[in-house]
Length: 340
Ligand code: FA5
Image (cartoon, protein in one colour):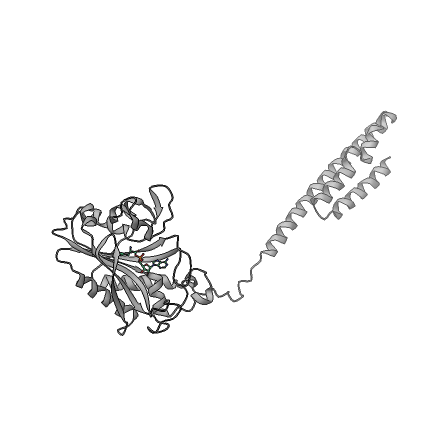
């Protein structure tokens, strides 16, 4: 019997040492120490032995079990150590290898235009203000002299969130916010930002685009100040020989109102599909702040006048760089964006 246990022990140790992973090791352990193992069978037959044999075999079985347990624990530790070593090896870094070059980041061309315009306006004494993109109907429309049910609300097809909250359709609501904050003092600000309209996307229209609003409120402000300021800005951004056209228009929040066109960069005024045959591209709306707008924001229209404008950032960027489709700004094609 002792010989049999010796043989079993040699086999068990060999099997345990051959195990390549924890599963194989557990299998080996249960084969040699489990309930159906040969050693359990020997134990179940103990009653057939003499007292002397029982003592001798019992002691040997205990030694067998302790030895096998020790052997399993040792092998388990070795397997775990090997796993850690393999992981470390797979994560090994050769610090002497040359580094990978990351391409430099760059500003989006629309951001560049905004920064350029901001710099020009700051140079002309304007400060910068911002307002929320999710706006109250009150600021977007009502304080802009567009009460509920005013037919001119249809000029800008709106994404409503609730009856009172909407995605702003223009940057003009920032005018009302700035005026309320200035509490009757003179104002000279520009307000850049994103705006949203349910417009069909085409070469010159996008459902989300950017504007930069301008507002000057003071005593003795006139239409010629507006014309002078805008002419100066566009000559600086687009070049001294830029052709600019002011034409009468209508906005409920300005009176009188104008729209400003720049000669089409593609056909140089002859007429092409981009400018819809007119030779001009509209880039902004502007005018003298309507007395109602001044009054609602706490300004006395008999003492103060103001001019305001809202420039389309995409349109001016298209003119500056000769881009013939507004959708290029938003499709994130790096080949396009990298050029600027
Ligand atoms: C307005 O949004 C007025 N708030 C501008 C204004 C401000 C007038 C202050 C008077 C005083 P309009 O809807 O015309 O006006 O838009 C102004 C400019 O935004 C346009 O001239 C054009 O350059 C640009 N724009 C308008 N709709 C789109 C569009 N769907 N996609 C791209 N640019 C657009």
